[in-house]
Length: 273
Ligand code: SAM
Image 1 (tube, rainbow, N blue to C red):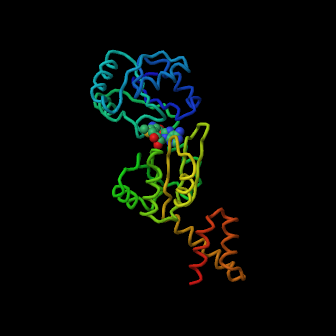
Image 2: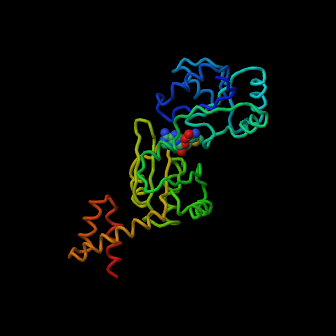
Image 3: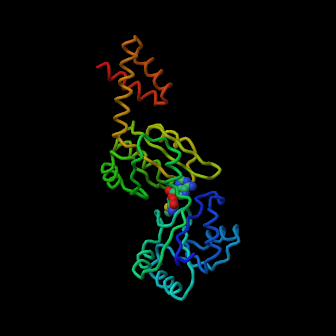
């Protein structure tokens, strides 16, 4: 291991989700730069990691970068971790990394858990293409701007449980109540759940279920949605030509293709016009 600076992914909930290599590296370094020493201490205790902890969060990253670079230049091995998942993915570290590159210090990454990739691996999608926007902006206008910009791409974002309902209401207003979305909550933890449905159905669900824990969500591409609508319409026409009512056609298609019944029914009515 010749590299001098290690970016190390840590678990996003389940403490067992850490690689052998990550533990090996964290055991071998002299210092670990971390967002919150209390959080990293829990991981260090579990895996017998004894490196000294240096706090490096978004409010002190600039000053701490100097200190960390001095330590490296004095021969110390240093790793960077965040509170959860992969550092620099909606986490601090960018200022420090720029300084390291400027000084020509070798940087390497020990990959592992990340909420975005964990979530995407559990959501069936028609296309690989997606955009990750980090935490979605808080205001309606900024949400409108960013969702409009990415409306033809699957748009993945982080959101706090306290703001999720309002954000879902905003998505309904901005893109329409039939917009398909997926929400992942508490991934890798005891109460892990991933739900995929229209934004209306998901809003109703979370209004009547306790909404706690960490959230990652995706608004499906409207383009993929439009293609699927055309596909459904084609099937509706076949069934209607065979004598099925719009209601029965909707029942059959939603059962066979796991589509939302109301949405298919609306398309079936529309196809009559
Ligand atoms: N660096 C992390 C990563 O690799 O995913 C993300 C850090 S960001 C500050 C924290 C946000 O990630 C949380 O507020 C939540 O939106 C999302 N997140 C982290 N862990 C999660 C989990 N277990 N389930 C769902 N979302 C999670």
